[in-house]
Every structure is written in structure tokens, then in C-alpha cells.
Length: 268
Image 1: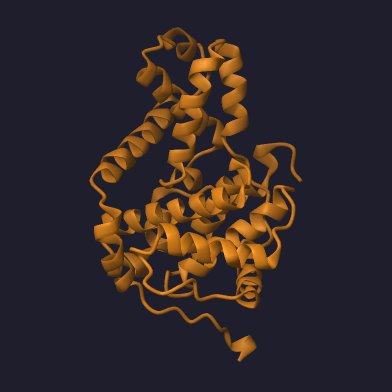
Image 2 (image 1 turned 180 degrees about the vertical axis):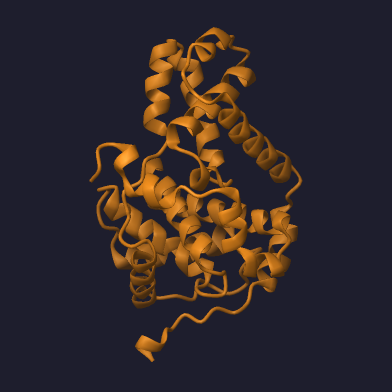
């Protein structure tokens, strides 16, 4: 495990720019306008969050799983593997990488069935259709696509450090932490280093709570334009989220996803 973000595979291989994203998503963006694609990603991030909470894993596992999911569908079209199969696969792998412990096969599938039935029946009329053998096969594709670059650096740790420096832990930390969780529904985790995301979320928390931290930010040696770019993307998410009627819109969005080919020729 790389102890330094700047020497890690996260920085060297998995920080993209906006043009990279648009180019990689070209096929999907021919099916979905960008606004609809963003709504799909919000929906599946919500699904991963609900699955993680039902499995009682820590937030870091959920965050890692969400980034794995986003990485896979940056490099692959939605038609490659059903996102409904990829989501629990990402949780399954993330729980091992983040040393939470292996989730038992039966518990993972049972939890998927419960979450689909109780929380997402508006999107899926049928029960969760996959078995553990398909999750394990999907995990192989995920590992192969990420070239085994599994260690992630999240904004949570730098956030704690910054707030300790400011000295307003009790009020600022929960709000900024929540904004980081929400930011997983945007592309910022693919575009910016975690310390910049942490600063943007901290800045937003200060504004929301009416805390005057201008002097603290002014003394930082960071590119404030990048911080503002991240802030704009998260604010754009909140605008889209506010107008997103999931129960009404998601079934039509899912109907547009091409039917995936789960099996590869190597298993044929």
C-alpha cells in the first residue's frame, strides 16, 4: 500500500480530466443525455449506500465501492455488465480491501434481495436476479479492469486534519462529512485529489453553518480555483437531486440501458 497519495496508483493512473470522461463515456452518452446519465449514477450510488447500510459496513467501504463502480463504468459502457450486478460486487470487493472483513456469500445475496424488494421495488419489479457465482465472475472483471489498483485515498482523513487545525470539530465535521458523502454522486472523485475535495466540502460546510473561516482559507497554499470547481459540481448535484423524482424517472432510465452481456467468450 502506498503511504503517499502522490506516489499511488490513485494519483498516477486514476485521476482523469473532464475530456477523458466525456470520451470514455461516448457510447453511453449517445443513449443518455449527460443529465440523465448523472441521474443514473445518483441512483446507483444511492443503491450502493443502501446496500452498505443494510450490511452494516463502515462509510469508507461504501465510499470505496462507489468509486470502484464509477471507475468501471468510466472504462466500460453500461451494456457490458448490469450495474445491478456491479453494485454488490463493488461492495464485496471494497469490504475486503478496506479490511472490514469478508461478507458471507449468502448474506450478500440475501441483503441484495431485501434491499431491492423493500427499497427499490419501484425500479425493479422482479427480485434480485443474480447469484454468488455471477458476483465472483464480475469481481474478476472489476479487478482486471482496475489492473488491481485497489487502494483509494478518500477525503475523510484530510478533512479531519483540516478541521482539527481550524478547531471547530463538533459542528463542522458532521456537515462537511455529509457533503463528502454526497460528493460521491458526482465525478469529483475521478477528477480531483482527495485533499482538494476535502477543502471544497469544508468550505461548503462553513458557508452552510455561517462559520467565518476566510482567513484560514486565505493562508492555505492551494489552488482555490480547483476548490471552487469542485464546489460548483457539488452544487450542481444538489440542484439536479432536488428535481430528481427517482420513483417516477428511474424505471424509464433503466429501460433505456442496453441489455448487458454478462458472459465473456473466455467462459463460453
